Image (cartoon, rainbow, N blue to C red):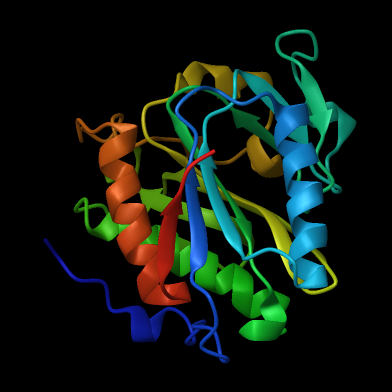
Length: 237
């Protein structure tokens, strides 16, 4: 498998104090969005207080739309199609649903770098490294958050979004995170203007011709996360 040139992508985001590894949790059943928000709120508070370790939580949601703090009403094209939730994270409208790997990232930036922009860059590098291991070249854009894939088969200037990033930070502890399209129903994105970008489309690993499952992607996600952010330990619910 290819190796990503990570030095060109992101500064070192390993913990500075050599403390406990990050808890790594995978939920097998879909998680209701309200339940996920409640868990994040509780865990972020505990991390900030020093009473719980950092956590990355991998899950799927049932079909829904979330509105970030910059969401525009006119970008919700079919408001009655799926439930719509105010997310509290940065960004605009995003779709979540089966076949999409959502990773909620709850890290203490005081242990690493208290730099939100660098943290977003690190998340992008994590996704780009994961895609590269599947022979997909993901790219970042200065004017668009997320990870993008060139689609010359659909036009000279066509780019599709394969992963969204939206975060929130409280007392230097992060929550929300990334969503990587593995094999979601891409038609479900038509109910919104994804992240406010009308000029480009949305794609997934399977749409790009890579037959892969969420558990297979999870293995690479964990490896690439550790390269950027440090050691993890698998925990159960």
